[in-house]
Length: 193
Image (cartoon, rainbow, N blue to C red; front, side):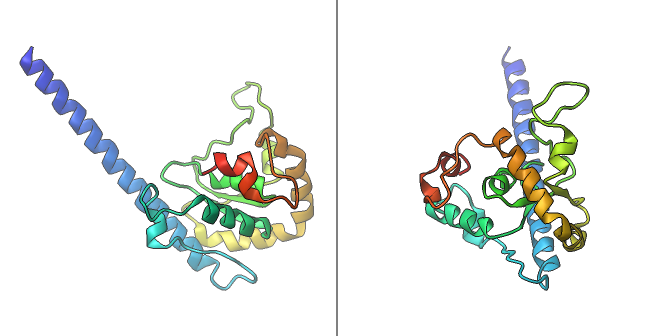
């Protein structure tokens, strides 16, 4: 029985080490993608692409961004037409929901991003995949240098994409601060932290 417990404990430690290693690799991949995007948009007219400062990358640390700072980021997103949504440590990212909340067309850079509320495999969903594609863009995560071209091509359809985004926003958000009201008071800002 003691040998079995030791073997189980060793197997659990190995599994934990493997997950931790995978997490570090995913974080490194996400960081590389974000750096590539910053370079790709460096000379793009009116682009506001910023890399996180080293202290802001350590979420959960005492130096992590405050709620007010994060709401400030969302205020900046509100002034943008297109918002980059690179994968995070997982294939999805909260930035997708932040883009929708701030009325910014999401530009998804994640090959395995699973779109929420979308009908798949013959099942029912709140939205069709075509509906989501009508208000968002996708760039393969292995080709971040293509993002400026994809955004440039989509500029002429921006008004229609925004109309589609407005038509489908309610499927993603249940409460928003009223226009002109401070974002810090809204449930979306609190939830997306």
